[in-house]
Amino acid sequence: MTKPMVIAVANQKGGVGKTTTAVNLGAELAARGSSTLIIDLDPQGNASTGVGCSIKGREATSYDVLAGSQSLQRVRIDTSVKNLRLVPSTPDLSSGDIDFSDRPKRIELLKAAINEVDDEQFILIDCPPALGLLTVNALVAADSVLVPLQAEFYALEGLSQLLMTVREVRQGANPALRLDGVVMTMYDGRNNLSQQVEADARATLGELVYKTIIPRNVRISEAPSHGLPVTMYDPGSTGSRAYRAFATEFLNRQKEMRQ
Ligand code: ADP
Ligand code: MG
Image 1 (spheres, protein in one colour):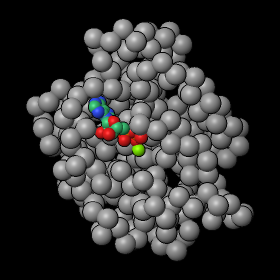
Image 2 (cartoon, protein in one colour; image 1 turned 90 degrees about the vertical axis):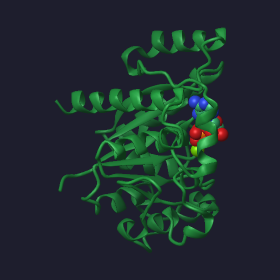
Image 3 (cartoon, helix red, strand yellow; image 1 turned 30 degrees about the vertical axis):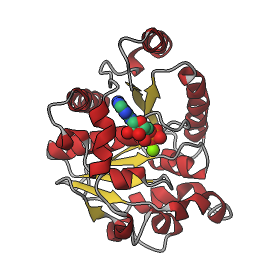
Image 4 (cartoon, helix red, strand yellow; image 1 turned 45 degrees about the vertical axis):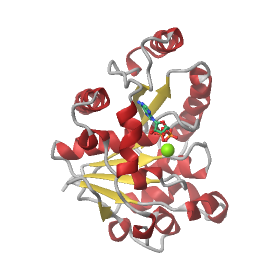
């Protein structure tokens, strides 16, 4: 068994498509035969709900993993998707920033837990909407960062703050951390602003921006209430097609980076 590829899905802005991207990319990687684990690192637990894990099903959580009281292998559970497993979260995690702040290795808690895992091919970490201790734990544990960028006006301004945090982590605890890329989400082709933000992003970030764009699609937003990724909820929808195309481009990028 090889070391898993660990990807942090991060952006300190809320509602930009982190969870949606983690769930749907994870489901698509799993559907293509890769054993995949989603770690829900957001106290809101949206990724947990999104793959069909009810609140009652969250006995052991990512909080226990960070606290070191449970191994990641014991906490992870199966989901509604074959090959896709989940480390769920609950609102308890919202005190994590404070609870773990006096630990000597407080930014390496998740990394230590992930190091014990050798039977997953991909681990996607769904980060909370902040650049606090939880997101830093994800960046320290990750091989690369995937950044969903909502096609709206202030999107690029928030990005520079995130990139600064990535740089700091690289200069310290995780020099090997790579920026996988930026994926435009909730894109509305009829909206001039969406087009403008996309043009700006491509001009500023170049090849880092994925060619595939995730459009705004109502099926994507309906799927979580059924506990399913959109690719299972409505495989023929434009949202499903976009996330499948995105998964293909993501895998090609992974292949290129390994070479
Ligand atoms: P984040 O995890 O960054 O806070 P989410 O993935 O939860 O963002 O997305 C925020 C909201 O937007 C959710 O209700 C989600 O269902 C919806 N959403 C995300 N992506 C799309 C999309 N492409 N089209 C329509 N709705 C979307
Ligand atoms: Mg989220």
